[in-house]
Length: 404
Image 1 (cartoon, rainbow, N blue to C red):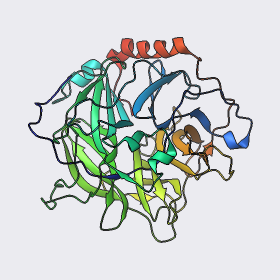
Image 2: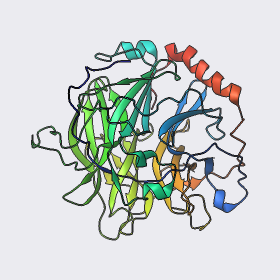
Image 3: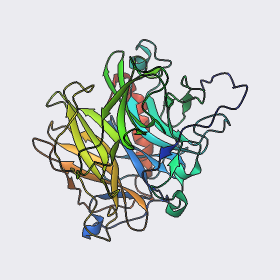
Image 4: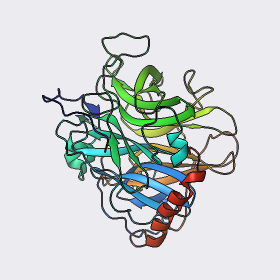
């Protein structure tokens, strides 16, 4: 593990951040997708999906209570049991920013030679896991009541862990005194050296490798001036040392689905259009959470909403597994340039979090439909394929390029 020298005195308490979605985690169980209330549902007892396609199959990193879990699939729909050991658990270092809970945000995949050849990269790791960490147990609370739903604030900062085999991980400590990659109130490029706009957290770091020496992190925080969440940008040459570049997307106009703020922005470069696409959580005036979309030509500025309406809303069925919240979107472009999948977290009236999927076909990316397939048992399904997928990726990493 790459570590920094221990601190001589306890650091000041970290900033505070909004808890977006409660999570009650348990072993996935067999479901039947016959009822409309279950449309789109893939995996119960899970949240914050990060899905990647790679040689040998699909991988899903997700939040399970206070830890990060990993599952594998051959088709991205039917997921095997969690791989052991867990990719990431809370830190045992008393001074760290992530001693209570961790939540996955994004993963970059590199081959060993590809990673080591990049200037400034600290290792030949295949997997780079960016995550949010907290010192507050509510960040990974197994009971919605204990999390106090969305009314509470908890500390959250971005971190990085790396792995060469997908099973064994090491944290990379950032420049912040807690080991995080960034902190709140830090200087932006060309900005006020006293503080940045973030008041409570730097959460949900989603990272795009734009080009050699140009990595971009999209994150959210709470802006005290506007009293709502916004999405910011940071840039890096090596993926470890970051510099903030300001806000890129704020809440919408009065009456819009995101007038209460935007957060959890996931950015993907559209192969067909050559532009950048962001899916994000939008909060309306009543606190209802939907998923919206914005686009930018260069991914740095000029972000504009693709529609004044969300691309995905909570289910209209009161008994639906995602009837109260849809959020934490993860966008995946398929082989067809105009075909997309969007994995997301949903929460029902019972407070249980689960992962689902919606898809879009054809030009425009204007409409997503919830997947409606017969769900397979995930508790015991495909245990050998899970191991095979990880092993296959390890053997083929010499031929891999960065995957987004």
